Amino acid sequence: MVTPPPSVLADRYGAPARSRRPLVVGLVVVLAVAGLAWLVWVIAFHGRPQVTSEMVGYDVQGEHAAAARFVVVRRSTDVSASCLLRAYAADHAVVGEATVPVGADRPTTASLSSTVRTERRATTVELVGCTAKGQRQPR
Image 1: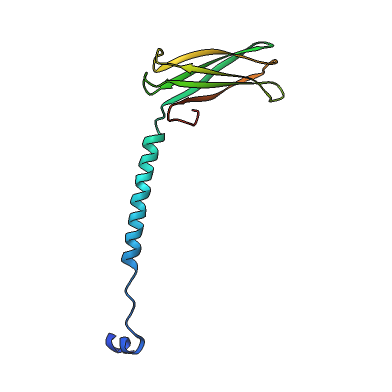
Image 2 (image 1 turned 30 degrees about the vertical axis):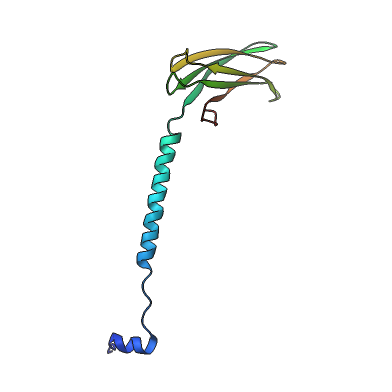
């Protein structure tokens, strides 16, 4: 089989359209760079929050009180934080809440304890988390 020269094919069928491949490759590269920049920002901003907390334990002290022990880690002593404790009854109803402030007078890693006053006997205490200025999500 003999292949006709390209000029004969172009005369008969028209010239081939310019390839879109460079445009597609350029667009993919731009999107990849933008995605990578976003990922770096997310890691830098959310990877190291201003404050984190962890529950150590709790003790139900009676009909109207429950004590909680927790650890708070702040990025620096300049960061003021507040931690939310929530007490639950056997029927899973919230029976008490307490907000515990963590000021500059504490070290960056502090073991704290606080008593939550309850309206009736609590069965468990949850550390919802701690927040600081610029950090809306409790951690």
